[in-house]
Length: 353
Image (cartoon, helix red, strand yellow):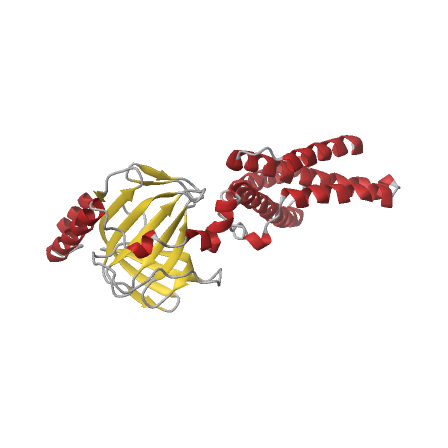
């Protein structure tokens, strides 16, 4: 994994006290993880806490871009469950792909962590052990540790201790004794952050994309408003100046492109992952399209409803298309309601035009 902090590290030791913890039911609690790699690399992460016990703490890291672990690639949308054991110098992670299938286990070696309320401080000692589902366990980042010793970032005695612990973990993994039973038996089906994605991946990703499209619209509206005010104050773009109008359109187009990319990539606030209690389904969108059509009968004067319905049907058509594509891609089921609703919206738009 190199210097990218995806999975922290602890020293080898058998767990005898803790049982498999039940996930906390309070979804949304988070912790700040301060991750240090000697000599001076410091990174900060915000992770969702699933269980906060005295002997075991479980958090989830969401993979925002493709990540390589040995010969395995964790694609965007995957999740990593971190198991931190207070007082023990190791941390173990269970790595899952976007559909909730486990790809393997990862052990990071660190100094004994400092744990405070709302904050965990971890210091990386470079070595990792990766246990892919279809791979032999392997030791990673030995070269990084050697370079750290050569540069003086790590003392030779500490490096030898970490190497010995990593070799012990590697042997235990090869003999089927690692990771601890607590990690292997953690009930993934009860993890709030992963349940929707595992059970209804099409609905999950459709809501994720739709939510980001909505966020794009909000950000774009704000950007256009601010840009328009600025141009109105310092140029004649809206008072007959062709060059000023062209400049305004160019700036707005650039803003749209940048905001669209950032929104779909989830790089802006309000583009978080959907929760089960908040999701929209294709059934809801289909019903919404039918209700919108009733406006024609409620307001027979076309001037009152045509412009409004065009926006509504256009938005519903985009959202239904996203649902149809996502459900077919991730669930391999023909999304009947989404397709019918999409076609209905297209027909309505043609009629309105």
